Image 1: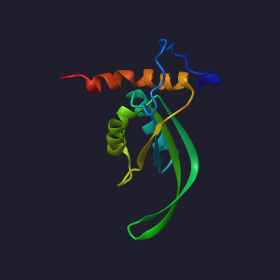
Image 2: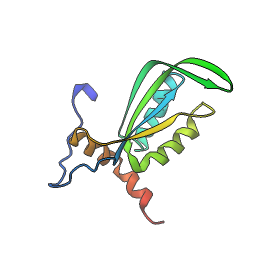
Image 3: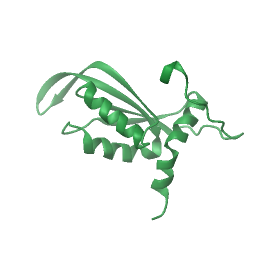
Length: 134
Protein backbone atom coordinates (compact mmCIF):
# COMPACT_ATOMS: atom_id res chain seq x y z
CA UNK A 1 0.00 0.00 0.00
CA UNK A 2 1.06 3.63 -0.24
CA UNK A 3 4.29 4.43 1.59
CA UNK A 4 4.31 0.99 3.17
CA UNK A 5 1.36 1.83 5.37
CA UNK A 6 -1.71 -0.41 5.40
CA UNK A 7 -5.11 0.90 4.35
CA UNK A 8 -7.15 2.41 7.13
CA UNK A 9 -8.76 -0.47 8.93
CA UNK A 10 -12.56 -0.47 8.89
CA UNK A 11 -14.18 -1.16 12.20
CA UNK A 12 -16.69 -3.86 11.44
CA UNK A 13 -19.60 -3.99 13.84
CA UNK A 14 -19.49 -6.72 16.42
CA UNK A 15 -20.65 -9.98 14.99
CA UNK A 16 -20.17 -8.97 11.35
CA UNK A 17 -17.94 -11.89 10.48
CA UNK A 18 -16.59 -12.31 6.98
CA UNK A 19 -18.90 -14.29 4.74
CA UNK A 20 -16.74 -16.85 2.91
CA UNK A 21 -16.82 -16.28 -0.84
CA UNK A 22 -18.16 -12.71 -0.68
CA UNK A 23 -14.81 -11.39 -1.94
CA UNK A 24 -13.09 -12.76 -5.04
CA UNK A 25 -9.63 -12.60 -6.52
CA UNK A 26 -9.90 -12.14 -10.27
CA UNK A 27 -7.03 -12.76 -12.66
CA UNK A 28 -6.50 -11.00 -16.00
CA UNK A 29 -3.49 -11.28 -18.30
CA UNK A 30 -2.34 -8.27 -20.33
CA UNK A 31 0.18 -7.95 -23.16
CA UNK A 32 2.29 -5.35 -21.34
CA UNK A 33 2.57 -3.14 -18.26
CA UNK A 34 1.06 -0.07 -19.96
CA UNK A 35 -2.21 -1.88 -20.75
CA UNK A 36 -2.28 -3.53 -17.32
CA UNK A 37 -1.80 -0.19 -15.51
CA UNK A 38 -4.51 1.49 -17.58
CA UNK A 39 -7.03 -1.26 -16.84
CA UNK A 40 -5.99 -1.49 -13.18
CA UNK A 41 -6.39 2.25 -12.61
CA UNK A 42 -9.77 2.26 -14.37
CA UNK A 43 -11.26 -0.62 -12.35
CA UNK A 44 -10.12 0.96 -9.07
CA UNK A 45 -11.44 4.39 -10.10
CA UNK A 46 -14.79 2.82 -11.06
CA UNK A 47 -14.80 0.97 -7.70
CA UNK A 48 -15.05 -2.36 -9.50
CA UNK A 49 -12.00 -3.35 -7.46
CA UNK A 50 -10.43 -2.33 -4.18
CA UNK A 51 -6.89 -3.23 -5.20
CA UNK A 52 -5.01 -4.56 -8.22
CA UNK A 53 -1.57 -6.14 -8.05
CA UNK A 54 0.47 -6.24 -11.26
CA UNK A 55 2.78 -9.22 -11.57
CA UNK A 56 5.22 -8.55 -14.42
CA UNK A 57 7.10 -10.90 -16.69
CA UNK A 58 5.00 -14.02 -16.55
CA UNK A 59 5.29 -16.49 -19.42
CA UNK A 60 2.07 -17.88 -20.86
CA UNK A 61 2.06 -20.98 -23.05
CA UNK A 62 -1.26 -21.76 -24.71
CA UNK A 63 -2.92 -23.00 -27.86
CA UNK A 64 -4.49 -20.33 -30.06
CA UNK A 65 -6.02 -20.98 -33.48
CA UNK A 66 -4.28 -24.34 -33.82
CA UNK A 67 -0.79 -23.15 -32.85
CA UNK A 68 1.14 -23.37 -29.58
CA UNK A 69 2.01 -19.83 -28.54
CA UNK A 70 4.42 -18.48 -25.89
CA UNK A 71 4.16 -14.87 -24.75
CA UNK A 72 5.48 -12.62 -22.02
CA UNK A 73 2.54 -11.02 -20.20
CA UNK A 74 1.60 -9.09 -17.07
CA UNK A 75 -0.79 -10.76 -14.65
CA UNK A 76 -3.33 -8.63 -12.82
CA UNK A 77 -4.61 -9.92 -9.47
CA UNK A 78 -7.80 -7.99 -8.76
CA UNK A 79 -9.59 -8.00 -5.39
CA UNK A 80 -13.30 -7.26 -5.53
CA UNK A 81 -16.68 -8.29 -4.24
CA UNK A 82 -17.88 -11.51 -5.81
CA UNK A 83 -21.11 -9.78 -6.79
CA UNK A 84 -19.08 -7.35 -8.95
CA UNK A 85 -17.28 -10.02 -11.00
CA UNK A 86 -19.81 -9.89 -13.89
CA UNK A 87 -19.50 -6.07 -14.14
CA UNK A 88 -15.71 -6.30 -13.83
CA UNK A 89 -15.63 -8.92 -16.59
CA UNK A 90 -17.81 -6.82 -18.89
CA UNK A 91 -15.62 -3.76 -18.34
CA UNK A 92 -12.35 -5.64 -18.91
CA UNK A 93 -13.74 -7.20 -22.11
CA UNK A 94 -14.77 -3.73 -23.37
CA UNK A 95 -11.27 -2.22 -23.00
CA UNK A 96 -8.90 -5.17 -23.35
CA UNK A 97 -6.88 -5.47 -26.58
CA UNK A 98 -7.09 -9.28 -26.79
CA UNK A 99 -9.74 -10.91 -28.95
CA UNK A 100 -10.54 -13.18 -25.99
CA UNK A 101 -9.49 -11.61 -22.69
CA UNK A 102 -8.70 -13.92 -19.81
CA UNK A 103 -10.88 -13.01 -16.84
CA UNK A 104 -11.22 -15.70 -14.21
CA UNK A 105 -12.27 -15.26 -10.58
CA UNK A 106 -11.92 -17.42 -7.51
CA UNK A 107 -13.88 -16.85 -4.30
CA UNK A 108 -11.83 -16.02 -1.21
CA UNK A 109 -12.84 -18.42 1.54
CA UNK A 110 -10.52 -17.12 4.26
CA UNK A 111 -8.07 -14.30 4.91
CA UNK A 112 -7.25 -11.31 7.04
CA UNK A 113 -10.70 -10.19 8.14
CA UNK A 114 -9.92 -6.43 8.31
CA UNK A 115 -8.53 -6.57 4.75
CA UNK A 116 -11.54 -8.48 3.42
CA UNK A 117 -13.89 -5.98 5.08
CA UNK A 118 -11.86 -3.15 3.52
CA UNK A 119 -12.30 -4.71 0.04
CA UNK A 120 -16.06 -4.79 0.59
CA UNK A 121 -16.12 -1.26 2.03
CA UNK A 122 -14.18 0.27 -0.89
CA UNK A 123 -16.43 -1.38 -3.49
CA UNK A 124 -19.70 -1.06 -1.55
CA UNK A 125 -21.17 1.91 -3.44
CA UNK A 126 -20.99 0.05 -6.77
CA UNK A 127 -22.52 -3.06 -5.24
CA UNK A 128 -25.35 -1.04 -3.71
CA UNK A 129 -26.12 0.82 -6.95
CA UNK A 130 -26.08 -2.38 -9.00
CA UNK A 131 -28.77 -3.89 -6.80
CA UNK A 132 -30.87 -0.76 -6.46
CA UNK A 133 -34.14 -0.56 -8.31
CA UNK A 134 -34.34 1.92 -11.20
